[in-house]
Image 1 (spheres, rainbow, N blue to C red):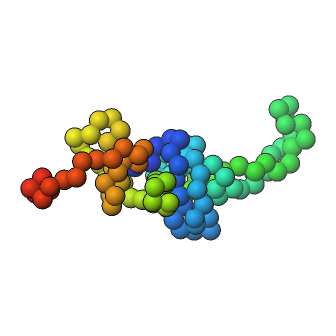
Image 2: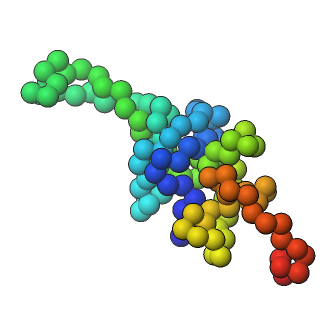
Image 3: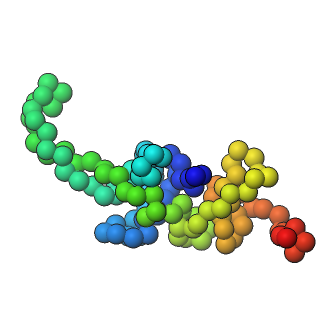
Length: 117
């Protein structure tokens, strides 16, 4: 299945405790459909003292959230927006569904009624 989320994309969380939060995608796990978003879903990890961390203690880090709980953020709409794929586009073939604008901001030509069929 094609994924609409890639590393370094800005996404908006649409459900859960962090609903409405925006952040950059740090990591994508395609096999388990998980994403790690910067500053979202922070958890504490209790670590033992080591040479790297002689103090030990609690370290705060981002935990993964499911891919279905985030949408790519569209700055023109001011919120997250669903993405569809257009085969005829170049390597950046992701297109915003409602506005017909790519997520990266490139506008598309208006489609005539004959082209839609």
